[in-house]
Length: 121
Image (tube, rainbow, N blue to C red; front, side, top):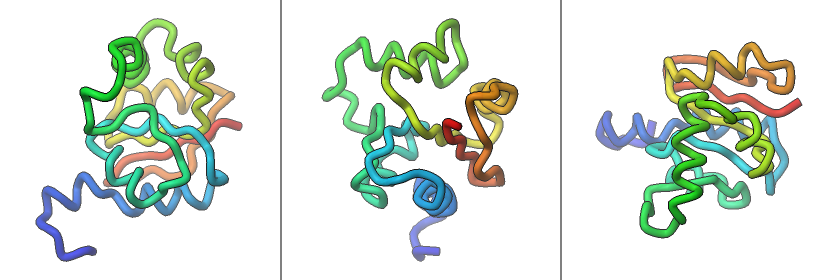
């Protein structure tokens, strides 16, 4: 643990970062639960994330895609394809995790109290 306050550490899930690093090569595009995204950018600088905490930098279309995909809304698979997403990092209990678990195009890399990592097969 980093010695950081518990809340900060919850938004810096190192176990998910480590699993992503093991499972995917540098340069892989990631859909990361937005509260985790800045930590992923810091820890995995060579892995582009779809969105991060700098809300004002991303066009509305990207946020619409993120908002749809993160809740497994209509067309979520096409969104992940269009953005060439190779890995998805989610918090515990995420709706999208249930869908990815059932989709043969995705494989569960890790799942635990910090969240889950799915990789495209």
